[in-house]
Length: 487
Image 1: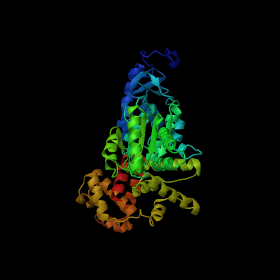
Image 2 (image 1 turned 30 degrees about the horizontal axis):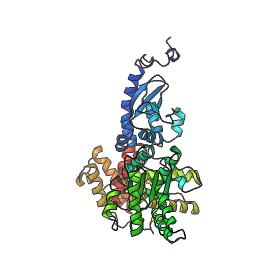
Image 3 (image 1 turned 60 degrees about the horizontal axis):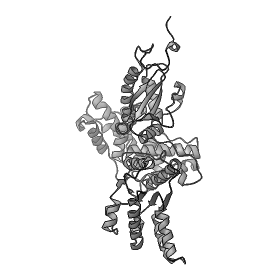
Image 4 (image 1 turned 90 degrees about the vertical axis):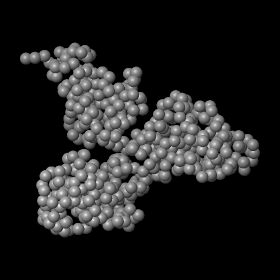
């Protein structure tokens, strides 16, 4: 009756596709416009703007679409974190059948190691896209090997430091030197340092790298004078620091507290920076706030690139928990189940460092496994009740109503009125849901505080909000943000 797909000449990028009536490149551009809109929704506007929005169509034929990234770093990040979601959405919007394979390359047509492999519909239904968080760490025998760029969860508060160190791995010259990563304990500075070390060792085997902690620096510096080797001891110590291509010092603030080692650090920086050797340091405060550091040392530390790692926001804590859950399933308990409401509740309650979040996660999981209890919002509340994360301020129905009203831009009169317009009813349902979730008030009591409504109305609101949180990611995120604000 008509030509089959096999009749189309392979590689002809201008010949119209028989199923769409368009040239492959034209249909690719149309599909890409729709894919970008979905990516902004699925990944979040900030993530999309930082990564996938920087791709553009570089070429297309009947079986493959090539997307070009502005740098190898960006291409590698998209490949490792967002490839599955990108291909899934492409399959959704591509009018060419079967959907084309998506391949990412950098400017200059240099493809990255992997392509975004197309998957069957059954595979896509069986697998949950892992686009919003990095893959769990692989099993390894050493603490150091567990820290990689792939399993570092990137968010708005650490993406600059992450990008700077990823760039340093592939940069041929020392464009920024030294690189200083600073932030409070438990924020992930050591993880990034080890990830950088592992990446350089695997990709640039010709470089000589030396990593040392601030405490080791001071100890070896003092020991070089006390040993029997005398002058040879200090010269050997200096050589270990300066006869390298890359020097990494973790917790470098320890070095600045001691006058002798402080001076040695300064001289080492001067020597390595002058010779174009890369120096990377982590510390718990901004270099300008080092109380015992000289102005000259501060000047050298701030002469390169200073990157801060801040506290994880709610969205990032969700992704950290997803990674921890996946890792625990892989290493210890493949049957671990943590429902989304319980996970979200834990992310909302723990606003400390990622290390603290991991500690509480381990406590929750261990209690569940040892006592044979499922993990729920209630069991998490129970686990946290005796910890420093217990609620310090009692939530009231009035406070929840006002917070939700402000978030949805309605008035308190609307909240308790009889109006049933969706713009009013939906925020009211959210407020009822959060009152049931976050307070000890009974259903009839909650209903009375919403304009004298019946307890069945509250039950319906709770059920409806739970359903919407399962089906609508944007709504789920907004409710989570409100809950986080309340807590």
